[in-house]
Length: 453
Image 1 (cartoon, rainbow, N blue to C red):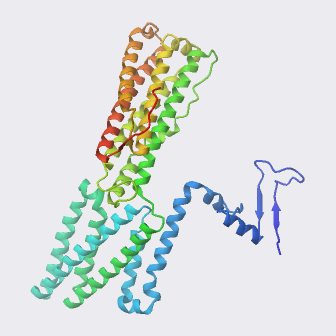
Image 2: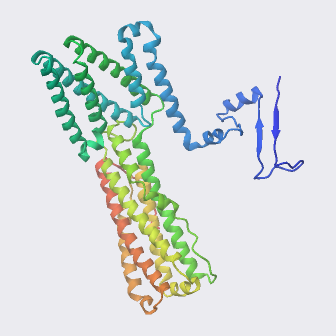
């Protein structure tokens, strides 16, 4: 039997078609349509809870996958409690395996591997040195001497390890490992005050074993069940920025042409949201590059891939985004669009438009080269086009009559032209960085012929 109950609330109005602002709540209890939607790989629409619309977004698929993988890992590691033979081997130390899964499992495979290895190294070093210090204190010292040796060792190792955490090179990749070292060393050496030296070694070995179990579960699930790679995310985000900046620059040039050709008082309407968001991408890029260095060979990324070059490319892209924002600001700063239009007409419009099209084409070609991981036949053309663009800009600046007009609109157009020249310099620097990445990473030669534009 199929039963469906629908409750429709339309702000107290009856017999009125639902509008965009109408509040509608639907309850669908029919089972057959549910299974048909699942077969079609569609999420069930249940408008009462906003979480359904949140889950329907394609960008959240990775978040759902990650959440499911964490749940699978927790179930697998909980078998240490559920299965009697396993519990007899590890006992209550199984809690350390569960803690390892909770604190180690990260969003990407590289982050999970890096954090797991840091935890393993910190546990081994901290546990080993803690056991040595505890046994030494029990055998050498006695009474008050035992406490003095343990307190001294805690102070020395804690101070040295904390000081090492302050170094940027250590903090970037091994901060979590050093923190685990401090924690493990203190737990082991202090616990040695109340127990015998034989039990210290036993407790340390059992806890290390359970931590290794948790780490193995995390790695297996992270690498084998729909792996999420930080390297793929960094590569895709870097490639997409070339096209985003090309589109932003294209929109900026179109606004410039409108000012020069149209006689209506229209303000600049180009959107620079992507450029603004790009300015805040440095910390995310550094984090992804750090995780990518931990990842093993997979897909198109091998060992020792030049992720540092990706950071350099990202830095140049951020500088280019800032210049494009300044270009848009030059047009939006005008108080009298009609006056600005007349000033724009004093500059060689066709030359600026051609220069801009060359820059946009170059950015698209560089992004395509990075995306396909191939050296394009257009690389010699890129260098030639940028040199020609720089020469034409110098000619535009020399022959234009901007300096003869003394007002703020002339200053805006002059700034626009000079910033466009700065864009050419940054794109040329970007082309060199992409070429270096291709040489280091071994990009293949492009087989197709690219027609010059």
